[in-house]
Image (cartoon, rainbow, N blue to C red):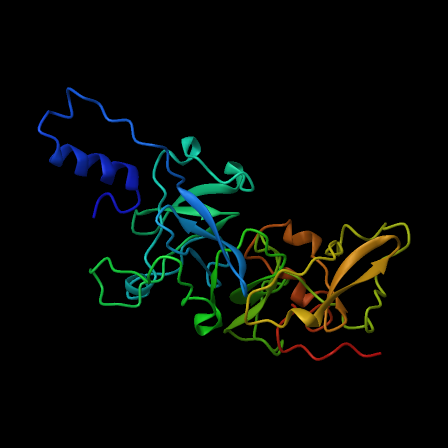
Length: 290
């Protein structure tokens, strides 16, 4: 299966076997094939697939941009690697090659990323068979609420990570000290999103008119909600903040935390000025008060 991620090589090899003349004497130049494609469905919209139409997925546990699917996980969610020449590959015009990258997993395997999210297949079969879901299928969407098709235009993603405050302490989902992952919202790049406890429904009570305090708690400036299928898109909206649009969830305006330095995997704001004042935004959040 060494040609699994390179159909061009596979076609060339097959033709070489069928032709009576030597391929070394007659170089075959196959038509270019995209390494990454965009598929779409009525329910999911556009999502990434490989050149054989196999759907690609994100994993919420990859909160830090590293590949955190290991051991038995990989038998169900194999790593996707586009190859060394992705920068020379044909891509759909709506995709930017600069958004793709390559990481090396803890076991030394190369893996392609998109907007810092490692990419995977869904293969719910016996390990080692190299059989995946059929081309065009998206059965992995929403599995365990932590696996999602790799859409190129999410404005909300979900990250599953330990909360570690600016004070260096670990916090649980109820903001008491302790260990345990919390599934919370991030932007497309995995950067943590927060709510401000004193805010009211669609009312930002923090940001000053001149945005002089925006560096500490920057507003999430968008009015577009593209979300995983386990979230209700109708619960998202936007509110006007001194001439700018801020994304809301259940009426809660959403913010970044400046000292997170726009680095994925950080959620330091949960302890500032004390735990619970700036909670991360979660699916089960109560509706903001009016």
